[in-house]
Length: 310
Image (cartoon, rainbow, N blue to C red; front, side):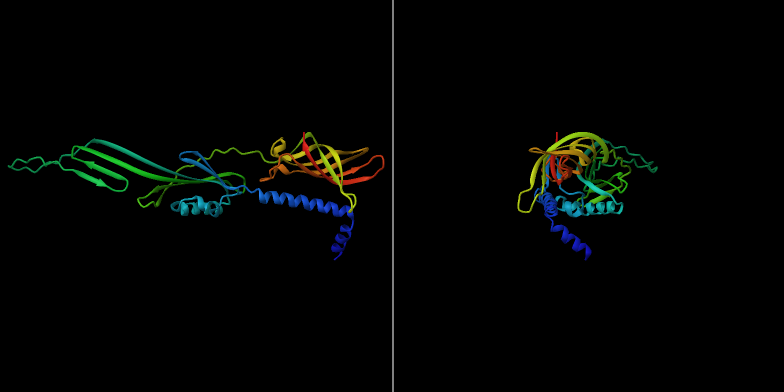
């Protein structure tokens, strides 16, 4: 009850109401951008036999890929994804490859003679015979002197790529021979080697950069917020690389605001790079709370700053 009273008292103050409205507005704007700019799956035909399907999800599941997988491969895909779940592997890629191979050969027939029984009647050589064997993969024929064959096989390869709880890349590969009725007959895989490039993890680093933009400070309920130019230097940052597009946070950035003849000196306690969030059509736009002080009048200034890096 005490918390509700404190919140109610706080919301009766114009400054608190403006700050709350600004924070809620920024949150709703980002949420709307994520919702309405969700990209559709994209199919890229790299060549006549190779295509890539980009799906805007964080991990591959049976439900996600079901409509893109042939009916004949669905049970094998589902089984492989279940194996990854059991190993706690977050699958990021699923690949299905089909292959066919036909080989032929021929050569002389070598027979091993047997010792005929001793009789007074001379024996005649047996007449030539044509031998034939054929199933769904092998066609063999011999006329007694020369043998020929044709071997036709079809294969399916299904593999997944992901990382486990220890961030170790894991690849699962399954090989199948396609039978006469399009059934998948598993073939044991004797060895799998994964060579992976690991992107750098996010870390804190120091790199001073200049930022500039506008700062908005609430004044009174009946008037518009007061706007001012803001200049800041971000220096303590967190990102996967020392580049703006890979940096998400910055802390304790010194800043000043400029408006007519009024100048305040302050700080941006934390800055959030909106452009680093997925599905947001912005680049290098920072949102920060601002805390400042007018050194002449000792008047405090609280607001929200929107800046870009230069």
